[in-house]
Length: 196
Length: 326
Picture 1 (spheres, chains in turn red, blue):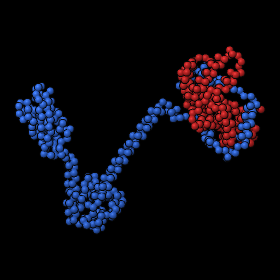
Picture 2 (cartoon, helix red, strand yellow; picture 1 turned 135 degrees about the vertical axis):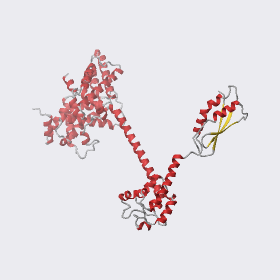
Picture 3 (cartoon, rainbow over the protein chains, first blue to last red; picture 1 turned 180 degrees about the horizontal axis):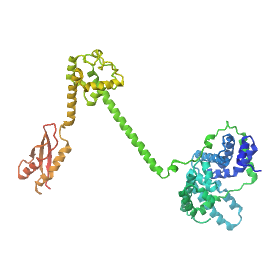
Picture 4 (cartoon, each protein chain N blue to C red; picture 1 turned 90 degrees about the horizontal axis):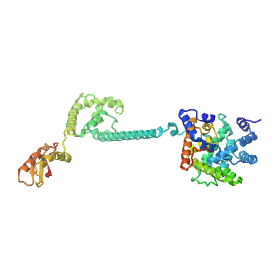
């Protein structure tokens, strides 16, 4: 029987560590992916993902049950990520090789043996590198909202609950982030209207 | 598409934006939604979960030196900002707000300066005025009741009671007037009997004493005060400057100068005229430097003689001007 997040939290609050373990397994991949896009650093993303659940476990008593548990976990993860970014001494310049957002692309290119696919892989990587740089140009607010909505696929309603801003504001932020990203891509020589 | 609709519900403007976005969303949004993720094996995730759990269970909540507190961790990370709340009007509103605050500060500063000046003047006049309110030979009061209207009335008129000899003479002969307690004659500040000088009511009760005419004190004070105040006001209203201002002189001569230039023929040498204004402001004399007295110079003297400046105190004022032909 698959228990809901609320039931798992309730059990964890009663001391059931297995229930909390289930919650970790269920949400860790997405939290890790969010952290990776937020902090853009492999090691820091691992730390943020792990710290999110450690802090959530410690704050179980403070979970009031009005929101969904995943909203609560996302909020912790976003706060930890923003804190990590703000505590950096200087704006770190990450190379493509270090950026965990391109891990899959690099891995896919290595796995593919066919020489015929190489130009397509390179072009695809170019698009994602440009997109990542365009996202990095955005403000903290627009970037976070865009990552949650467009990359993570959360609805405006969910992101509204996570970030604590009205849905209309989330919609405006997404619109603004897309507009700026389109402009950036155009400046970089990509056609944003082009399919694929 | 239904998800897109749900994302943009709530505002027609945003719905329009959503339609507009859909034009160019295929490539960018599809790329963002399908951002490649390096898959991990189930075992790898299980191990990561075990590590996380082990750390969660072992961490002492009180011992952890967290860089961010629990309350900060659970607060909304990116709530709506003022700019998002008020949109494009926020910047204009912000400037209006700053302007309003600056105007209010300037107004408050001006009021403060005026208040300070008034207080300083009142204090200066008060120290001068106090002895006049004591009878001759009486020691100065230790503490002047604040806000006593007699003093403020004098202050407003700018009268220094020390300059009122006639009033003093009247006071010497008048003795304790009706309505003034015997203590007044003993040297205490003069006030109506039974009035507490420190009470605000006392100042109101004392206020009419000088302006009204109840007894000998005010009869003596009033004319002297009126004379002093009158002369002061007359001096302010009817006072003439020691000499005319250069602006007035240059204006008067400048107005007459074109006519004076017309007196000279194109080839004539420049003429130097010394204009003497009398204290009434009119021209008393025009002296030409050449002294030849030809028709041109007579013409110039005639024109310059019509110049006029405001009256001034000195007997005369001399101004020299060079008249050149046109």
